[in-house]
Image 1: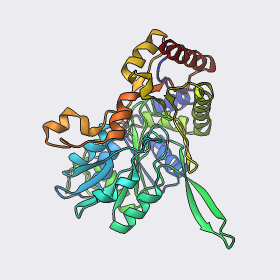
Image 2: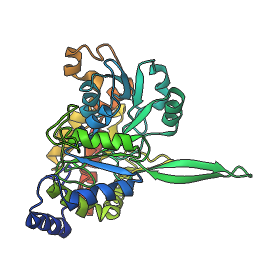
Image 3: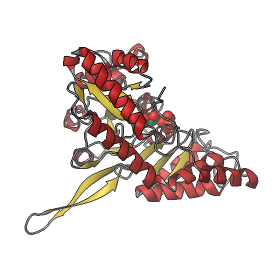
Image 4: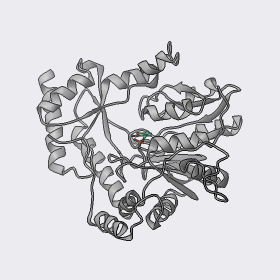
Length: 385
Ligand SMILES: Cc1ncc(COP(=O)(O)O)c(C=O)c1O
């Protein structure tokens, strides 16, 4: 069976972990933590990095930095992981959902403004499966309504967004490329084992704002005060990452360019081999985006008469493992029981949830495995006709 993902662990990871073990600094203090935070922040183009125990913890702390009052609203896509909604609910806020944009599956930014109210405090764009969210309209709205942007970059390590910098006299446009994770006021990463760089479990909050950075550091560590330990003026969490995990992360980070290139190679190879399969909708790369194809997602056209579930079963018969797409947050029974999102409908997210899945995309995958997977897909489609 070809797995959806397998982490790529190299010699450097063993070396750093051994060094960490030998040093005795195995909990949440130590040189690997400091270096990992500093270098990941620098790689993404941000000032401060606060390593935490997961991407979910990163989101929770990021939202907590905003000091939401009960009922304050945060706008986010429905097509995302539950962590985004949890981060707002656990902070007493109200998540407000937006449908997906049909090509990139990220939040449809044209639908945000009509959901902004006096209670809106933040927008949480989520880059999906490696493709950046279109940030320009979000920046405009954040400026117009004075909103904070919390950028969920868990799936977009190394992905980039094209920013227009100036128009010269002849009206030629000039651009620069900015890394995902540097596009908001606070950004959140996951380093779970299926992410482009991993620490097994882990995450990070990035920001240029010193106040947010200080608060995030306190919150991850039970709000111990610097001046006096075991004295608390606020409630915190134990969301600490260990030095051991950071040792793995640092080794991974040292070859991030190679890892991102491998993901893009996987994306190109699938694109090339699947481009003529009628009935399949492939992932895109907008002109303004560098897609890192964290996971290679595909959609089945209605005319195939097959949903993603059935397709996954058939692919398994060929030894190919897949994962279903997210089920929108507005379709989750747990939120309906809480009286949330009950009569809401987001047609694009509903459709892609049923018609989409992602193929094996791990960093260890070989060309001949992609060959085998694409052959299996073509055969399944041939049998449909
Ligand atoms: C978009 C997104 N945000 C947040 C998370 C949460 O990260 P973690 O699993 O590290 O808690 C994930 C995890 O896959 C994710 O895909």
